[in-house]
Amino acid sequence: MQIKGLLRRLRLARLLPSRSLQTLPSLEAYARWAATYPPNAHNALMQAEEAAVLELMPPLAGKVVLDLASGTGRYGLMAWQQQAKVVLTLDNSPAMLALNPMQRRMLAGLDRLPLANACADVVVCGLALGHLRDLKPAILEIGRVLRRGGYAVFSDFHPFLFLNGARRTFNTNTGVYAVEHYAHLYADYQAACSAARLEIEAVREPALAEADGLPVALVFRMRKRRSPVVV
Image 1 (cartoon, one colour):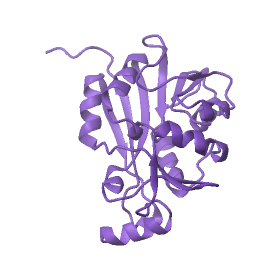
Image 2 (cartoon, one colour):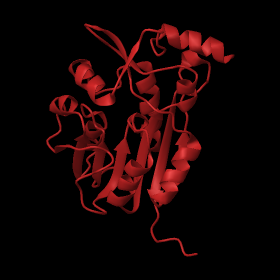
Image 3 (cartoon, one colour):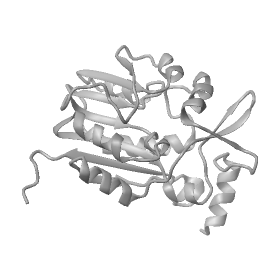
Protein backbone atom coordinates (compact mmCIF):
# COMPACT_ATOMS: atom_id res chain seq x y z
CA MET A 1 0.00 0.00 0.00
CA GLN A 2 1.30 3.48 -0.84
CA ILE A 3 2.00 5.82 2.08
CA LYS A 4 -0.50 8.32 0.66
CA GLY A 5 -3.21 5.71 1.03
CA LEU A 6 -2.28 5.11 4.67
CA LEU A 7 -2.29 8.82 5.41
CA ARG A 8 -5.72 9.15 3.84
CA ARG A 9 -7.02 6.36 6.10
CA LEU A 10 -5.39 7.89 9.18
CA ARG A 11 -6.94 11.24 8.34
CA LEU A 12 -10.34 9.58 8.47
CA ALA A 13 -9.39 7.96 11.80
CA ARG A 14 -8.50 11.41 13.28
CA LEU A 15 -4.82 10.58 13.62
CA LEU A 16 -3.81 13.22 11.10
CA PRO A 17 -4.14 16.92 11.79
CA SER A 18 -5.66 19.55 9.61
CA ARG A 19 -3.51 22.58 8.87
CA SER A 20 -5.17 24.49 11.70
CA LEU A 21 -4.83 21.77 14.36
CA GLN A 22 -3.05 23.07 17.46
CA THR A 23 -0.33 20.95 19.09
CA LEU A 24 -0.24 21.30 22.87
CA PRO A 25 2.67 20.68 25.26
CA SER A 26 2.13 17.28 26.83
CA LEU A 27 1.32 18.62 30.30
CA GLU A 28 -1.32 20.99 28.95
CA ALA A 29 -2.70 18.32 26.63
CA TYR A 30 -3.20 15.79 29.42
CA ALA A 31 -4.70 18.41 31.71
CA ARG A 32 -7.40 18.91 29.07
CA TRP A 33 -7.66 15.22 28.12
CA ALA A 34 -7.78 13.73 31.63
CA ALA A 35 -11.53 14.04 32.19
CA THR A 36 -12.29 11.80 29.19
CA TYR A 37 -9.22 9.51 29.38
CA PRO A 38 -10.31 6.10 30.75
CA PRO A 39 -7.82 3.56 32.23
CA ASN A 40 -8.12 1.25 29.23
CA ALA A 41 -7.18 1.10 25.56
CA HIS A 42 -9.91 3.35 24.18
CA ASN A 43 -8.97 3.56 20.51
CA ALA A 44 -7.63 1.28 17.78
CA LEU A 45 -4.03 2.48 18.06
CA MET A 46 -3.95 1.86 21.83
CA GLN A 47 -5.54 -1.56 21.38
CA ALA A 48 -2.84 -2.59 18.91
CA GLU A 49 -0.12 -1.16 21.17
CA GLU A 50 -1.52 -2.87 24.27
CA ALA A 51 -1.68 -6.29 22.61
CA ALA A 52 2.02 -5.99 21.72
CA VAL A 53 2.97 -4.77 25.21
CA LEU A 54 1.16 -7.69 26.86
CA GLU A 55 2.81 -10.14 24.47
CA LEU A 56 6.24 -8.93 25.61
CA MET A 57 5.42 -8.47 29.30
CA PRO A 58 7.28 -10.86 31.65
CA PRO A 59 5.36 -12.62 34.45
CA LEU A 60 4.38 -10.04 37.07
CA ALA A 61 3.19 -12.22 39.97
CA GLY A 62 5.19 -11.43 43.09
CA LYS A 63 7.16 -8.64 41.39
CA VAL A 64 7.70 -4.96 42.17
CA VAL A 65 6.30 -3.13 39.14
CA LEU A 66 6.62 0.53 38.18
CA ASP A 67 4.06 1.99 35.78
CA LEU A 68 5.79 5.13 34.49
CA ALA A 69 3.80 7.92 32.81
CA SER A 70 0.89 5.88 34.15
CA GLY A 71 -1.86 8.34 33.31
CA THR A 72 -5.14 7.00 34.64
CA GLY A 73 -3.55 3.67 35.53
CA ARG A 74 -3.98 1.34 32.56
CA TYR A 75 -0.88 -0.82 33.03
CA GLY A 76 -0.76 -0.44 36.81
CA LEU A 77 -4.23 -1.98 37.05
CA MET A 78 -3.16 -4.86 34.83
CA ALA A 79 -0.08 -5.50 36.96
CA TRP A 80 -2.22 -5.59 40.10
CA GLN A 81 -4.67 -7.99 38.45
CA GLN A 82 -1.69 -10.22 37.60
CA GLN A 83 -0.80 -10.36 41.32
CA ALA A 84 2.25 -8.15 41.35
CA LYS A 85 3.62 -7.78 44.87
CA VAL A 86 3.85 -3.98 44.68
CA VAL A 87 2.62 -1.63 41.95
CA LEU A 88 3.73 2.01 41.97
CA THR A 89 2.28 4.37 39.37
CA LEU A 90 4.04 7.64 38.52
CA ASP A 91 3.02 10.49 36.22
CA ASN A 92 3.94 14.16 35.79
CA SER A 93 0.32 15.21 35.14
CA PRO A 94 -1.62 16.07 38.31
CA ALA A 95 -4.88 15.90 36.36
CA MET A 96 -4.24 12.37 35.10
CA LEU A 97 -2.86 11.15 38.42
CA ALA A 98 -5.95 12.43 40.26
CA LEU A 99 -8.05 9.99 38.21
CA ASN A 100 -5.68 7.05 38.74
CA PRO A 101 -7.38 4.46 40.99
CA MET A 102 -4.15 2.83 42.22
CA GLN A 103 -3.32 3.30 45.91
CA ARG A 104 0.40 3.85 45.37
CA ARG A 105 0.81 6.79 42.99
CA MET A 106 3.34 9.57 42.77
CA LEU A 107 3.79 12.84 40.88
CA ALA A 108 7.08 12.57 39.01
CA GLY A 109 8.62 13.08 35.59
CA LEU A 110 10.37 10.36 33.62
CA ASP A 111 13.75 12.08 33.72
CA ARG A 112 13.95 12.32 37.53
CA LEU A 113 12.37 9.41 39.40
CA PRO A 114 12.23 9.89 43.21
CA LEU A 115 13.13 6.24 43.76
CA ALA A 116 16.07 4.25 45.06
CA ASN A 117 18.52 2.46 42.81
CA ALA A 118 17.59 -1.10 41.83
CA CYS A 119 14.16 -0.96 43.46
CA ALA A 120 12.01 -2.55 40.72
CA ASP A 121 11.72 -5.88 38.95
CA VAL A 122 9.66 -4.60 36.00
CA VAL A 123 9.15 -1.13 34.51
CA VAL A 124 6.40 -0.44 31.98
CA CYS A 125 5.91 2.85 30.13
CA GLY A 126 3.15 3.17 27.55
CA LEU A 127 3.08 5.74 24.73
CA ALA A 128 4.92 8.44 26.66
CA LEU A 129 8.61 8.53 25.75
CA GLY A 130 7.76 10.26 22.49
CA HIS A 131 6.71 13.33 24.47
CA LEU A 132 10.38 13.82 25.40
CA ARG A 133 12.73 15.69 23.10
CA ASP A 134 15.68 13.66 24.47
CA LEU A 135 15.27 9.96 25.34
CA LYS A 136 18.50 9.48 27.23
CA PRO A 137 17.73 10.98 30.68
CA ALA A 138 14.50 8.98 31.02
CA ILE A 139 16.01 5.71 29.86
CA LEU A 140 19.02 6.18 32.13
CA GLU A 141 16.56 6.58 35.01
CA ILE A 142 14.73 3.40 33.97
CA GLY A 143 18.03 1.54 33.95
CA ARG A 144 18.96 2.98 37.35
CA VAL A 145 15.76 1.87 39.15
CA LEU A 146 15.74 -1.62 37.61
CA ARG A 147 17.36 -4.50 39.43
CA ARG A 148 19.91 -6.61 37.58
CA GLY A 149 18.04 -9.03 35.36
CA GLY A 150 14.90 -6.87 35.57
CA TYR A 151 12.72 -6.03 32.58
CA ALA A 152 11.55 -2.81 30.98
CA VAL A 153 8.69 -2.83 28.48
CA PHE A 154 7.82 0.40 26.75
CA SER A 155 5.99 1.61 23.68
CA ASP A 156 5.97 4.66 21.44
CA PHE A 157 3.87 6.11 18.64
CA HIS A 158 5.62 4.75 15.54
CA PRO A 159 8.14 7.27 14.18
CA PHE A 160 7.29 6.44 10.56
CA LEU A 161 3.70 7.57 11.11
CA PHE A 162 4.77 10.77 12.82
CA LEU A 163 7.33 11.63 10.15
CA ASN A 164 4.64 11.19 7.51
CA GLY A 165 2.24 13.57 9.23
CA ALA A 166 0.21 11.40 11.61
CA ARG A 167 -0.51 12.73 15.10
CA ARG A 168 -2.11 11.50 18.32
CA THR A 169 -5.18 13.68 18.75
CA PHE A 170 -8.02 14.06 21.23
CA ASN A 171 -11.36 15.84 21.39
CA THR A 172 -12.56 18.37 23.95
CA ASN A 173 -15.54 20.67 24.05
CA THR A 174 -13.29 23.39 22.63
CA GLY A 175 -12.01 21.38 19.67
CA VAL A 176 -9.51 18.75 18.52
CA TYR A 177 -5.86 18.96 19.60
CA ALA A 178 -2.62 17.09 18.93
CA VAL A 179 -0.22 16.07 21.70
CA GLU A 180 3.43 17.18 21.67
CA HIS A 181 5.58 14.42 20.18
CA TYR A 182 9.13 13.80 18.94
CA ALA A 183 10.09 10.99 16.58
CA HIS A 184 12.58 8.51 18.04
CA LEU A 185 13.91 5.85 15.69
CA TYR A 186 14.98 2.33 16.60
CA ALA A 187 18.62 3.47 16.52
CA ASP A 188 17.82 6.23 19.04
CA TYR A 189 16.35 3.69 21.45
CA GLN A 190 19.25 1.30 20.89
CA ALA A 191 21.82 3.97 21.75
CA ALA A 192 19.95 5.21 24.83
CA CYS A 193 19.36 1.70 26.14
CA SER A 194 22.97 0.66 25.63
CA ALA A 195 24.07 3.61 27.78
CA ALA A 196 21.62 2.48 30.49
CA ARG A 197 22.85 -1.16 30.40
CA LEU A 198 19.53 -2.30 28.96
CA GLU A 199 19.65 -5.00 26.28
CA ILE A 200 16.90 -5.20 23.66
CA GLU A 201 15.36 -8.67 23.86
CA ALA A 202 12.33 -8.26 21.62
CA VAL A 203 10.64 -5.67 19.42
CA ARG A 204 7.11 -5.51 18.04
CA GLU A 205 5.66 -3.09 15.49
CA PRO A 206 1.89 -3.71 15.64
CA ALA A 207 -0.30 -2.52 12.83
CA LEU A 208 -3.88 -1.42 12.50
CA ALA A 209 -5.96 -3.51 10.14
CA GLU A 210 -7.03 -0.39 8.25
CA ALA A 211 -3.38 0.56 7.72
CA ASP A 212 -2.80 -2.55 5.58
CA GLY A 213 0.03 -3.91 7.70
CA LEU A 214 2.03 -0.74 8.28
CA PRO A 215 3.12 -0.26 11.93
CA VAL A 216 1.45 2.23 14.27
CA ALA A 217 3.52 1.60 17.42
CA LEU A 218 7.07 0.63 18.36
CA VAL A 219 7.24 -1.69 21.39
CA PHE A 220 10.37 -2.96 23.17
CA ARG A 221 11.24 -5.43 25.88
CA MET A 222 14.59 -4.70 27.51
CA ARG A 223 16.50 -6.55 30.21
CA LYS A 224 19.06 -5.00 32.51
CA ARG A 225 22.40 -6.73 32.25
CA ARG A 226 23.20 -8.90 35.21
CA SER A 227 26.84 -7.82 35.33
CA PRO A 228 28.93 -5.01 33.84
CA VAL A 229 30.43 -5.56 30.41
CA VAL A 230 34.12 -6.49 30.64
CA VAL A 231 36.23 -4.85 27.95
